Length: 97
Image (cartoon, rainbow, N blue to C red; front, side, top):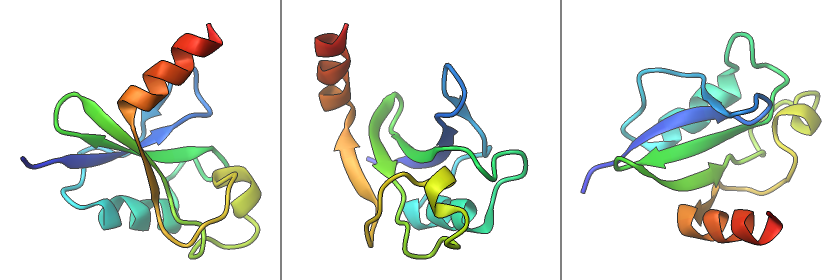
C-alpha cells in the first residue's frame, strides 16, 4: 500500500496542510520542514502519513534544524522522525474530552 506525506501546521486550529502536493517519501517532508515553509517558519509542524485517510503522524527529526528554530518549530528533540498511529491519538483525544 502506498502512502503520501504532507506537512501539517498544528499552530492553526484546526491544523492545516501547508505543503501541497504531498510527498511520496517521509524524507521529502522532513527536508521541506528543514528548508522552511513560507509563512510557517515559527509554527509547530508535523508530518501526516496518508494512505487515505490519515494513518500516522510524525514528529520530525530536530537534528537538522537550525538551533534558533528548534523551540518554535519542533518542541521535542530526537534524531529521527518519531511516528504515532492515529488510533492512539484518537484514544488520547477521547480520554481528554
